Length: 412
Ligand SMILES: Nc1ncnc2c1ncn2[C@@H]1O[C@H](COP(=O)(O)OP(=O)(O)OP(=O)(O)O)[C@@H](O)[C@H]1O
Image (tube, rainbow, N blue to C red):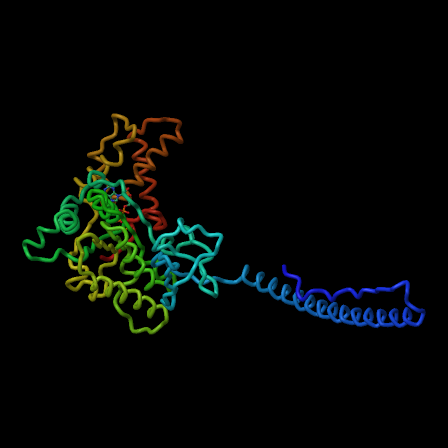
């Protein structure tokens, strides 16, 4: 810290022993006057210093208050677009404003990559990197790098498996074949049928077999849980998919965002419409479809707005019905293959009896049978356990309250 201006020089008193009394008195008087001047100047300086001190105290108080405000202030959310030598380019959510900015010194630049979501303050400086848990995209979507379901885990819908493979697997594995033949692969595949028949499994299995990632989004969540954010999440879904190619996008319960237009003009409907329009525009703007395949599913085919079924959108419709007797037998096989089943269990007869059961119902039945054995202290599951499970699930059916998906009356 510099000490300026310098202190006034201290007056010097030089008394010569040869001086007369009068001269001595005069010298003393002059000295006294200089001392008074210096004292006055020092007083003035002290006063100035006090004033400056008061100003600084004031400034410190203001800075403390601002610091507190900054600590508690809400931040804006932005996405990192690019890291450059001059700083980082971010795009603010909401207004899409692009800004070249910098990081708070506490952040490590190596931890950041394009695509990350970050919190920025009023001056756009990046304050925090948001982790996946705080990422709304991650909350709204289930992302599986490599699902483990295989075609072998799916029973009773072989024809549907074949069709899905043709429409989804072929364009992923052999895109050049479509080019050579000169046709576009189907844009989107719509699986429709009662609940619990294996639609989600089918989408996961095709992702697995093609080494693609699997991103699932539920239509009902888009409009119920993330109110007002549906359209943005659909945009995010396709953006995320583009980052993860090859990828299978699975939109479950598509009817929630793509049902026939109703006359009512409630804001909820407007929001659903916006979400659907976003979905349609994403699909329409999709030129290079090879590495991103879209599968949607619904239990309410009758509710769908025809706009989503036009060519270039969901133009391959595949019905996934409840399994017939051979299908039920195959699904029983699949779900009992890791079970310790007693010799008295007749799966053929059981398959005959399970009329109207979906795959999910059969999965519940086998689990329930296992529970009966455990309750009885046994490790082997007997025919009686399966009968008891069947009876229990049938009672659930009659009371109409049960967890059994296939028993609800769905139109499709
Ligand atoms: N065809 C099937 N083969 C074997 N298991 C099946 C089959 N269908 C359903 N399951 C069992 O039911 C569970 C649920 O199936 P899945 O989620 O694929 O049904 P879904 O048709 O997508 O149902 P929803 O329409 O209710 O979403 C599966 O995890 C599996 O255990």
